[in-house]
Length: 307
Image 1: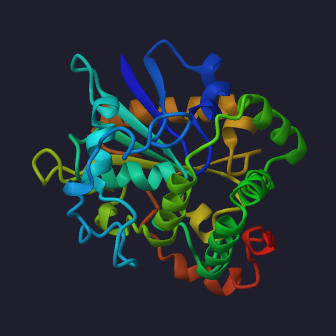
Image 2 (image 1 turned 135 degrees about the vertical axis):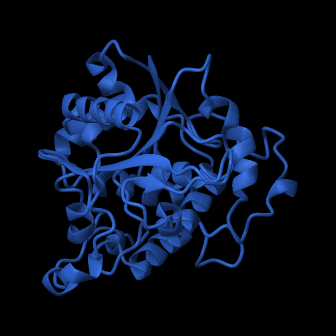
């Protein structure tokens, strides 16, 4: 059996994975885990996890920010028990959006998983032809003014790439009812991570692998990247560099293509285990090669928030 640990993204709790429940095969066990401060889970501070261990400002994840929003060692201490292998069974971490950035970074601070699936996320969140740094900064300012309104806008906007955004929004609201909400400080911290995190160094230039440093600081972690074919949060070149694009889906394939997503996750998990490496990746392609073509294609969404 393979243990799949599903990790959600910004402002959305683990219930986002519920539509996949009927599509898992008999070869996997599945557990969707909330991050601290999300889905009713205590924040790091409420859980009594000290920031005293947050001495990893130079690990490379927060390359663009002098003071990381939270030490990865602190997060690792809170998440370790949920992410670890149980009874020796292989474990695959599946991180979506912000969850992909954080999962990749945690491979340096926890016993490495047997594989890593990065869903809906490139080496960085911001991209000149996707969500720009200016757009994200404007959204962060809007969030500080009115967190509830900004979060609501984000939930709608990230669904703009689905075949039917209105239907996807209805499904999302149904899944997230009752609205457990999320700690506002945790959400602000998540936006800071999106602004500063860069897992390019973790990829280490090794196609299909994340350069995890645990347990022996040497063995790379097999990794694969997936996205919806019309994900509005990703620049076209980033989507093109993914190992697989799921047709008929945007940023939330859990809502629009749950069967295809579950099948893809299981297939890649099995390949990573069977082959001891991820499928051949084009992640190392030069995204800049497409910038001339994509220069006039900018993601709209963050810019429109003016609470």
